[in-house]
Length: 330
Ligand code: ASP
View (cartoon, rainbow, N blue to C red):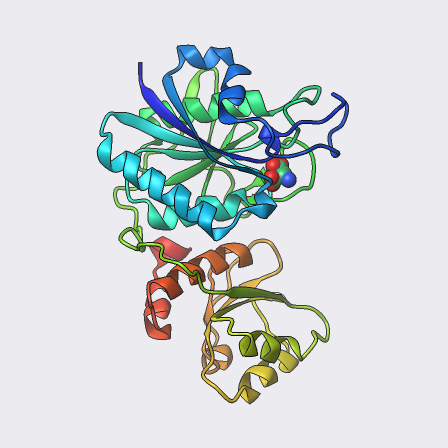
């Protein structure tokens, strides 16, 4: 029997409500990983699964110390246990894509690391968690999943960490990979994935996640954004900014002026977009201000990249080199 590790972190998949018909009013992160396993006895036929509890929170309440613990445990177990087939992480859906992308940038191992959540609490009529968990385990133990990087399994679809995002507040099909579609799917017949790329860049595979983590803010583009925001954030010691630009990553004149007027050095900055899909390219007018394009990364994933770049001590030129790598960004 293949061996897998389940790392439980909470979320709706571990949520409990008073009524089976309560889909929106419930408490996330109540059931522990062992209880999730007990709700899917069919897992016993799939693999020998060890369960560890990393946290038990709503994923909106995840903090950097949770991420550090998760990364440390995955790195440790993959290093010391060559016979382990893969790792599954149960996670709240709200920030699942951020954790998936963080791990994609940090974990250098061909074995699958699979994140899974649920849109309905465990107590709900037609809860989606049990089948999602079963299918995540199917994916984690499949040889076809090796070398694809970090994967997300929701509602039978397999998504790549870089592409996946939550696109709806409710409904079991709330995850998509905009513009490119899912990487594959999983069903009774098994795991359906294309052949993996021969080499996957893992830019921060050696990075040790020391405390404290830098503060990186996301600014949302809109008509007449408050001009006091940028100097307020910079005065507060924020070390990185992600702009959720309008259109293809446009900043308003108000925002550009605030950056031009800032008397000190500007932090590392990335331009993403608020459209939800499509690229942000290099633009000289913004590059002069030190703003680098985030490619097709969503603002929240651009922020994760910036957090790690700051922790790794990258300067703007080095971040520019990293973000210009097509294989990595586009
Ligand atoms: N509030 C939940 C969370 O992100 C939502 C979910 O898991 O679906 O933890």
